[in-house]
Length: 214
Image (cartoon, rainbow, N blue to C red; front, side, top):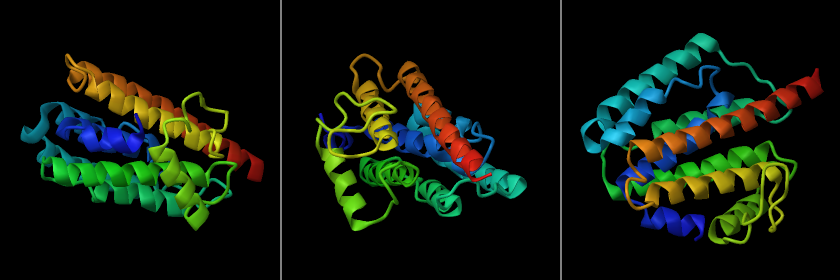
């Protein structure tokens, strides 16, 4: 099933986890402390009861981490621009635990995460009309990343980082939609593990770019 269809069919917990996972994977661009949003994952598991309070607390914690670290530009692409996009993902998170606003947020986070990965990919700069069109097609076409792995291009010409990010986004929504507790604590733990893997991939790319410039 395509990424677009998976987002359209997800419930509130699946949507919240999907959006948060996209943000979580991109955190290395913004702060070195990539554990800063871990408490918000508990809000995903608890749902409507804990989500608003944990979201507010996590926003304050991330802002404090940004101010304390003063994270520096580290690559040939504009890290500052990508980091601003990461911060905007959390700023757009709805406090309301409802399918409509959470679906809009999850969809926006999906696009933002793909755009960020494209900026660091060999495929070129993010934000161009051609890139936007290519990423939109990839989200609707299940064949694009059917066999893609990190380090290999997708079948629609998307670069290896984008292919890997698409694969993770799709897998996360599949896990959360599984019957018998996919969106419970165990399923969310699998999602967190996939996001940690994505963090490592993006951090490694940024480090390689930094070494290449030095």
